[in-house]
Amino acid sequence: MTDSPRGVVTERDGSVESVVLHVTDNGVSRLTLNRPHAMNAITPDLRERLIEKFLEASADPAVRAVVLTGSGRRAFCAGADLRGGPAGADRVAGDVARMIRSGAQRLVSAVLDCEKPVIAAVNGTAAGLGAHLALACDLVLAADTAKFIEVFVRRGLVPDGAGAYLLPRLVGPHRAKELLLLGDDLPAASAERLGLVNRVVPADDLDTAARALAERLAAGPTRALALTKQLVNASLDSDRATAFAAEAAAQEQNMTTADAQEGLRAFLERRPPEFRGR
Image 1 (cartoon, rainbow, N blue to C red):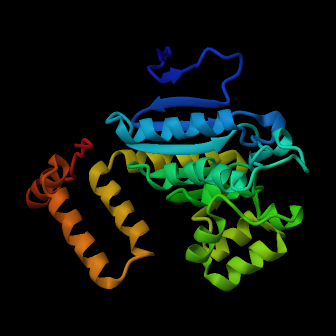
Image 2: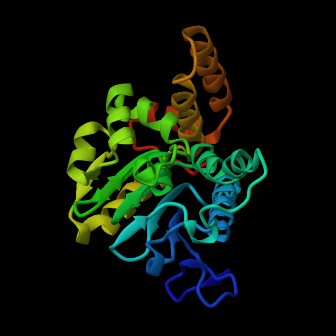
Image 3: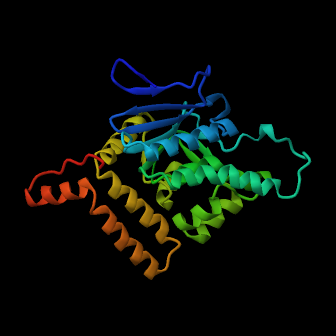
């Protein structure tokens, strides 16, 4: 970890070109998939590095929001890099399922379970696992030149990386089937209309928009945001009684935080709160 002249904390892992660039500034951790020559496709090394950074973001009190994006303008992430697994290779029964559980599913879970709000800044094509990586984020910003592709059907594959879990919850089963069964390109504007994207912005403005949104979240009550994220994610798989119990427990837990006490004092004193993520 080093300090740049502007006080921005950066990290280099000693490699000639890190597969995940990491900068922390003003409470925001920015993670950049850095394989532009391969459309930022996910290799095992990149996947493990990204999981590691999400785990670190969850635990680091200096990080209060995360932005995930890709290098260049061509692609956010083209999905898993399949060049390491030639077609027709001999496999032992169960190998593929184990690979999916320990690979793509762990990666998506790291995003869903991150205790800090995660913003996807989709700068280009998001295909396959790359699309699901973006959709697992809490908020999705997309450049007007970006597109999403459920590419699995084009390869004769079943979707992985939680696609069949995430999409029905975001757009409903019929729209999810349309995307998954046809595999057509989905431009950013269409993705916004379907509810997959929160905002579409001009490509030149994407970084600025993502930073502004992340800094707004980073100035918020960090633990309350984490508990809110957990409640919303769990609600999609819960009955009413379970959801109500989880809500009450989250309120109980959150009321012990300094930010909750500051929020109440600020309300009574008629001033803006100053949350510190505690």
